[in-house]
Each structure stands twice: as C-alpha cells, then as structure tokens.
Image 1 (cartoon, rainbow, N blue to C red):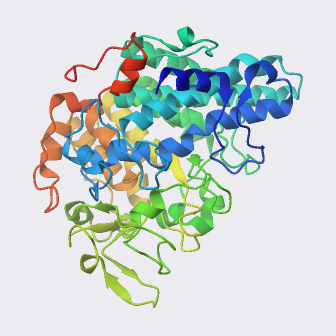
Image 2: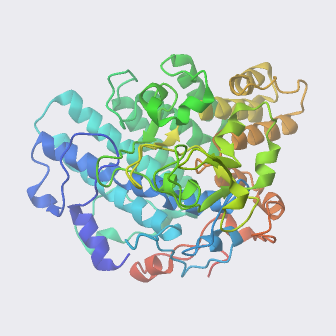
Length: 494
C-alpha cells in the first residue's frame, strides 16, 4: 500500500465486520477520540475481524488453492498466473467487481496487516476502558487471536515478514523490518497463549463468529504443526479432542449445508460467518465455485463458473467416499433438468464443480456460505500427523485418521504402514477432507512436496505447470517494498 494509505489505516478503524455480530459499523474514527466506551471496544474488535472477510472471502483462496493440485481457475483477472507460476513482484490481480481489491499476494499482505494494525489498537487501548471486566478480557483475548492468525497467514505465505505488535501513530512506526521465521512463530505462540488465557470455552451461547478457547487451541495446534513443533502440536490437538466441547457431525455433507450452519458449529470451530442479508458480510467463493450463469436450485442465484476441481482429483476419491459428493460433474438448471458440466463450462469439458459453497437461496451473489478457519476434522488429522512425526505410525495415530475415514464412509487405513507411508496417507487424507478450504497449497509447501506434485496436476487448460523452488513463498509485493525502504525481497525474487 502507499505510505499515506498505510498511515491512514494505522490511525483509524475502517473495516466492516465479517461475522454475524450486532456492533455498529465505524468508519474514519480517529483513535485520539476513540476507545472510550464498551461500544468503542466492540467496534475496534469488529474492525480487526473485518480483514477476515477479505482474506477468506477470496484473496487467500486465490493465493493458495489455485496453485495446488485440487482446483484451478478460469483464467480471468490474472488468476491463471497463480496456477502457472508466471507472477512476479509486480503482480496485482483485480476483482471482476471493479472494487479494486487484490486477489493475490498483495491482498494477503494488505488485509493481514490491516487486521494486525486494528488488533494492536484493541490490545493497547481496551484494557483501560471502564466496562464489564469479563467482556473486556474476552475482547482483548480475541484481538490477540486475530493478530496471531494474521501473522501466521503472512509467514506461511511470504516466510520472513515484519512483526507488528505496536499500533502506529506515525509513518515511521508503521515501517518495520522483516523478522526471521523463528521470531515470527515465537510471536504467534505468544499471541495465541494470551488468547487462550482470556477466551471462554465453547458453548452453544457463544456469539456466532467468535472463537472459543478450544478453537484457538486447534488453530495453535496447526500453527505448531507448520513449525514442526510436533510435541506442542499433538498436545494442543489432543486438548481440543479430549475437551469434549466439539464433535464431528455425523454426515460430512452437513458441515457445508447453509441451512445447518448453526448445528455445524459443533465441528466448524471458527469460521468466517457470511450473511446474505447484510451488506459486506458475504463471501465470493459461492459465486466463483458455482456453474456458469447458474440460477438453478442447487448452487446459487448467481454464479460464474470460475473455479473447478481437476478431473484427476475427483477420480482420486473412492466412489464410497461421501466427501466425493462435495464435487460433481452435473447440476440442475432452473427448470430442474440435469445439466452436464462438460456441456457448459467455458474452459474445459473436464471441469468438476465444487459443491462446498452453495446457497440456493442466495440474494444474487449475497450468500450464507461460511468459510472454515479451523474445524474439528482438521484437528484430528493434525493429531494423527503430529503423533506419527513424533512416535511413528502408532495405534493412537491410526485412531485419529480412522475417525475421519469412518465418518466419510471409508474402511480403516491399511494397518502396519511405515512412518513415512503413514504420514503420506495423512497428507492425502487432508487433501480429501479439506479441499477448497485454502489448505492444500500450504500442506505442499510446508512439506516441500510441491515441486514433485504440481507438475502432475495438469489438464487441457493447464497442460504444463513448472513451479520452481522460489515459488514455495510468494514475492513481497513491489509496492510494499517501495513504500517501506526497510523491506527486502524474498530469495529468488530480487
């Protein structure tokens, strides 16, 4: 972002809420006259959480899933540069809507740091507000959780990044050098520890969109997994599973049924909550995942046919696997007739539809499709991997992965696997369970598998894909380096 934009963002709470909360929307409120009341504290937290609607609404998906081996985009507004690894530090893709919000690395950088800046104001200012003490503690704890999540999003996307833990009152304070990866993770750990200490345990009365203590423990377990801190990852994942606060839904299809979103929170521990009737609180994933020009009863009132799964990924599922039903090669049109996707897709007859984000009662593009940040199925697979990394393919590790396979209608994993084969099986299970949830690309990069896996993930639209070692992390956007002379470009992108 330009320097003046960075400073304005630092001095004000600008962002709309991403969740179904009742706070008022605040805009252009300068902090010198703010953070005086309980309402100000709530609005400040809402402002920090507002970055989630941007990160999970689409930019983060575009910066990860389009580069992996499950799904690919229609090549509009530069999305194909992510799939083909032809982007560079100048890369900025614009949304079709004309709102000029970036879909690629620039968007991840911009909205993460915007969320961090707003969280910093909450952490610094809210403790001195005279208000209900318990709610004040929870607000500050959630701000720590958000700051930890945003820093983690940045480091898994860009590797070494600036750590921001102080609100910016001047342009000079806003410009920070990159920190080593170990220091970034240390800060994330500290923030998540603070969050866990202040957040309430999950209950049915928890406000929609608010993370519980157990949800942050689950996120923490995933952060530790990425940091190859196997013991901590296992400890935190087991704490979530053994707490009994959350459980897997009996039917995996129900997790993504918009009409069952309240019931799904027993598994969907923390999600970006969309709302079709509230402006700026719905996500764009429904529109891009649905078939072209959909107005039928299955997907949405309006969708564009811009995001498809590879046929090879669809074929990798056992036909008995219930999760395969979250993909499809046909849909019903407005008349109720069955339409084969191969007959209408604008880019390839081999495009498979993604069914995780559907809202047949959408209002045009506005929809109720929530996007998971962390769900219990993920935590089970984190536990399986962390246990295996630390202790091998134990009965405990098998128990965790088989819980997920059983829910999907699958037989138990082949017994007696070696440690390496078991870990490979867990990573494959993660691919089947968590596809289209902005997860797979980071699984491939954290394990350094992307260089061998991606060249095989091709079709008639993208027949050749050749990632290089430098693509493990995105380049820091050039305009950020131009705005901050303390920044240096990532290796391979100079």
